Length: 162
Image 1: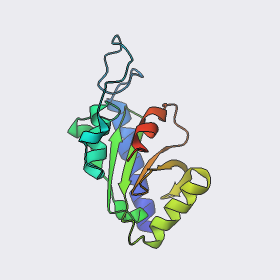
Image 2 (image 1 turned 45 degrees about the vertical axis):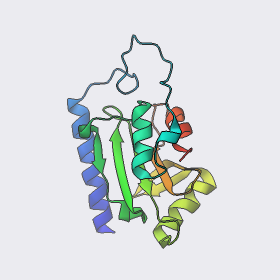
Image 3 (image 1 turned 60 degrees about the horizontal axis):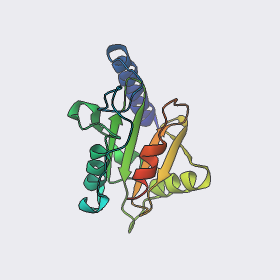
């Protein structure tokens, strides 16, 4: 338990420090504020239905950053996942994606699924009410801050297709 609390505090410090050095204009990633707001046309069928394909699809839609500096590998095993990544959207907003083994779901992973299925939130590492979404395939979970002012609806809509 102490290890989890220490990890959470480390993450919070990193986020707060990055907020001091990054600016935000409230626009979507990689988007010129003066450009039209129509989403790019992307054929979902050209992407593999796996963790990497899901990320590539969201990057091509410009819903998450394609910059290496905006992506961090997470400790997915904390929530019983196989893989996990976190994408910074701007100085304070982020989204995390996790891949689960649907054939052998560990107890911690089942807790994540059950909590998200029940009310769309999950308490992770002592942070209460992290919002969550399960993909249609049930292989992936998306987590994001419940108290965020960022509109995650477009990311959620496209993420669920995987």
